[in-house]
Length: 227
Length: 318
Image (cartoon, rainbow over all chains, first blue to last red; front, side, top):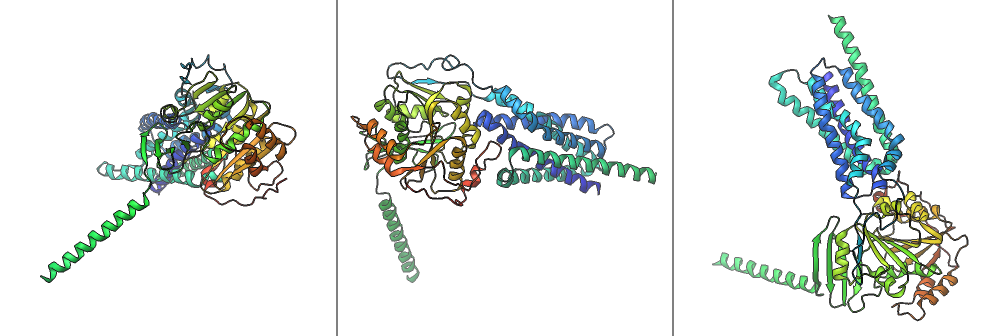
């Protein structure tokens, strides 16, 4: 029962993660451009968050792991996702402010003259995109990165079957990620706005977290009654 | 012996079929083309192809056969594509344009047209792909003038950052296979509007193989942003040019055409601008469009492009 619940958990967490990543493109592009530099920055922020989360989550999992704590991690990720639309505008405007100094003082000289073309090369958005991405999606990525190792600690019972168990868990999580990506790209972006999409993912994570907290406390009671 | 005969017959048949197929392919590709440039850039695969039979040089992006830009080889400063001529109608809409911004360089046909026929206009061009700029210089006879500046940047990022005000803003950044949604939304059109001088105008090229819901959503977005809107249906090309103007009063077709005649007078534009305005002009301001304006939050451009238009009241020519 608990193992099935953990599989559902990593599935939904994987789906929400990728749905958030797709939503992050839509949220950031209007302000920082639909440049490959922007996409690369956002993907890196998510991967970086997952890496940090994996290390922290794995470490925490070794000290009295419980379903309830896993639930709290997921709920925290959900709360942050719910909050992102509230401060997105402020972050994006801060990382790339509006009308500044007019050309060409800000972007150097065009270098042309006569029939030579004046071409200006302003700096691209890589640093603005990395910064905005980290501020907006760094924390939820870290929290969701904690889920896999933490769930693995609860999921694996017997060391001889470690490989099988981890394989099932990571496989399920990745299938969730695929469905989160496709569902968002194919349907949800057209169906609801970016902000609703973020909120929906937040609600799913909060709901999932709450379910785990409740399941964890029921389980503890049952264990105590049994003992 | 018999088997050998059959095999020989099959062999001969195959050779005939192959020869026919070869001839057929040759026949279909009777037109000679010369690829001048074919390279991956940061954004596209850029191809420059000459069509000597037509005396044309075309710019293609990616594998698409869609033509981004076309140049008549011995008339490099003429507007070859019908839609670019319709875009030029914007220069007649404004009584005395001084500052013009073009978002999306393409094959530089509109810039060359402006440089030649409106040499006093200060022209800024924003193009995201540095290789497109190089290709225009190398293959499309795009040269500098003291009044021309090219800024290699995302169009929206430029408009947000630069406080410069323009008389005319031409948007032609939809021409790749993908439509960058952040250049379609009400927030973006509003931003462009905020960079207009009094009486200024934004003209946007919408290009597709077939008219679809995205067109109308974009027309609606212009309607929602500007007091006056117009469109030019550029023949059967699939192009619609939408115009949004800050002017309080609408500009009647005949007035626009008269201005176009005045603009064209004494110039060798290569086409009749006044005639084009008369043929393509449609007022859009009061037309009912059954679509929602696109916003940064909800702009399902890719989905809308796949769907047939719902409903559009055809304009009655005034």
